[in-house]
Amino acid sequence: MIIRVRVIPNSGENEVVGRVGSVVRVKVDSPEVNQAANKVLIDYLAEFFEVRSKSIHIMRGEKAREKTVNIVGRSEDELKLVMESIP
Image: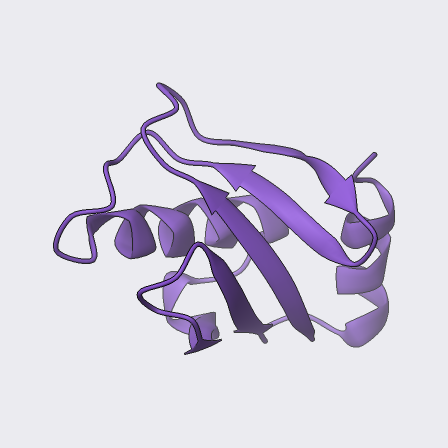
C-alpha cells in the first residue's frame, strides 16, 4: 500500500495525529537532522501497521516533510483497515 505521510519533527513523542484527505500526519520525537527523523518514522510506522521495519520504504521525499511511503508485509485489506482507524 502506498500512502502519503506528513512528518512533524521534534514533537516529544511518536504518534499518528490524524489524516487530512489522503495524507497521514505523524509526529516524531526526533529532529530532522541526518535522516534521523526518517529512521524514527520508519520504525514507528512499522509498529503502527504491525509490519517489520524492512517492509517500509520511503519512495519519495526523503528530505521533505511530506513523503510517499510504500508499506508491504500485510494484505492490502488489513492495511486499509488500519488506515480507516485513523481519524
